[in-house]
Length: 102
Length: 163
Image (spheres, helix red, strand yellow):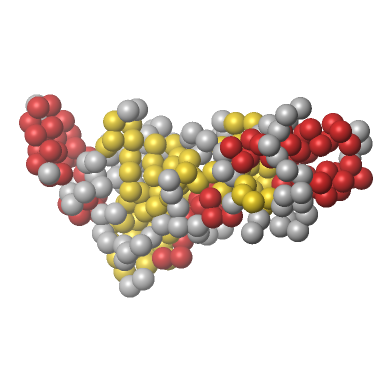
């Protein structure tokens, strides 16, 4: 799979530009676009794996470490988990929901 | 795997939490109105933009607030200010919601959209008159007579008010 994602990079939620909440077991993300959080147009939900990835983007772990942490906590081959992580990171980056940690 | 774009109907408690979280980031919150208590100025399924408070609230402004312990999100109009509390009432209901403490106000309605149109009437300077009439219980009568005015004259008056 071709990707531009560097697994040594540390990503964090774009705190100022996103509202993320777990509501009744569902993890909801509302991007703030042009100063507006719009529940009528653009909200996203993450499944259990997505939420686990989100929670591990703590500003300390790079993606490689996130994958290793997930591999020890979830069943499944590391390669599959890595693919999942890259997929969701690409999408979250595209939507500017996460950013590289400084 | 990708994040799923979802359409979701939130409960009052969930909306309260999301509105507070969004407004705390100095951002506005866009959501669908439900109900008819602010009709005709805000109608069922209009899209509202709730913005953070940046100034002292005044009579006539439409605010989103929650009633403590009831966890109910309400969008109604301020009809009177008492010290640091607000007497709030729906334009289309007879009784007031009560005297609401300032800390219960989540934000102010800054934009109303109906379909592709933006609705200005009810949020401009005329809001002061609307609040006065609402408080006196005269708004339904005024609205009844307003509906008798030919459409083009109503449009002209609205344009003049907002020009």
